[in-house]
Image (cartoon, rainbow, N blue to C red; front, side):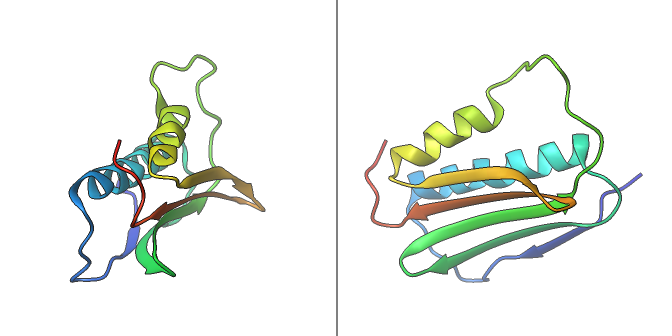
Length: 111
C-alpha cells in the first residue's frame, strides 16, 4: 500500500552543501516516520525560504503509536543537527495531525 505524498519544493532553490544535507535529513526523517506511523491520508512535505531561513516541514495524520523501544537517533539526533546551524526543529501532534517543522538560518555556522 502506498503513501500519498504532496511535496512543495521550489524548482531553483540553492542552499549551501552542509545546510542542504541537513535539510535532506529532515525530509528523510519526516517521510520515514510517516511511512512507519502515519494514519490514512496524504503526507505533505514542504521546503521554502522564509525571511532568510530555510524552512522544511511535514504534516500527516496521527496514526499508530511508535515503538516503545527506540533503535535510532531519530528526532533527537535531528534536533541536534539542526541546532548546529542555529536552527530549531519542532515535532509533535497538532489536533489530529503530526507536524514537523525545521527552521535553518541560511547564514548559520558550519558544523
